[in-house]
Amino acid sequence: MKQTLSITVPRDYSAITLKQYLQFRTEMDNYKDDPEAVETILFHYICGVPAELVSKIDVETLNKIREDLSRFMADTNYELQKFVTIDGVEYGFEPNLSKMAYGAYLDIARYDTITIDKNWAKIMDILYRPVTKKVGTSYEVRQYNGEINEDKWNDVSMDIHFGALFFFSDLLKDLLNSTQKSLMKEEVIPPSIKSILERSGNRTPQS
Image (cartoon, rainbow, N blue to C red; front, side):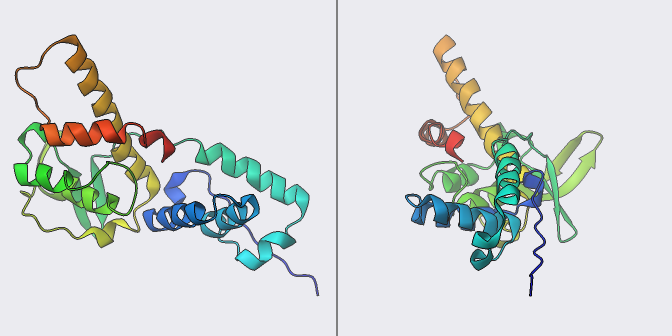
C-alpha cells in the first residue's frame, strides 16, 4: 500500500527552536564526512521527516526541499529582539551593557566563545532577565543575581537567538573599529569580554 508522507519545510528560523538547532548541529558534526547522512539529519530535525523515510522521497520533491532549505538556512541576519515572553513572563535584554553587573560579565567570560553552542542558553539567561519596569521606550530588568536557568531558552525560536548572537558580532566590529581609531581611555566592555568577542569573531559566521 502506498504511503503518504506530509513534509513541512520551515520558511525561516522562527520555526526552529534552539533545541532542534543544537541537536542538528551536533549530529552534523558527528557525520560531517557523510553527505547522505547529513541530508537525512537535516530532513529529520528541520522538517520532521523520520530518518528511515528520507530515502523514499521522490527525486523531484527532494530537490525542491533542498532548494527551500538552502534558501532559508543561509539567512541568519536577524535583529536583536529586546523583549521575549516565555511562559507568561516578559524578559528584557540588558538595557545598558556598560552598567550590567560585573558578576554577569564574569559569568559570560567563563565561556571560550560567544556562539550558539551548548553554553549559549546560559548566556541568554544572563543577558535576558525579567522586566521590572517600563516607561515609554525605556525599561529596567531584574538585577543579575548569579542564578541561571537556561532550560527555558531551549524552546525559544532561532530568530531570537540569532538576533542576540549577531548583536554581539556587530558589537565586536564596532569595538575593534573604535580601538583602531583611537586608544580608548575608558573601555565599556571589560577586557575578558573583548577577548571572548575576538575569539568568537571567526566562529560567528559558521553558526
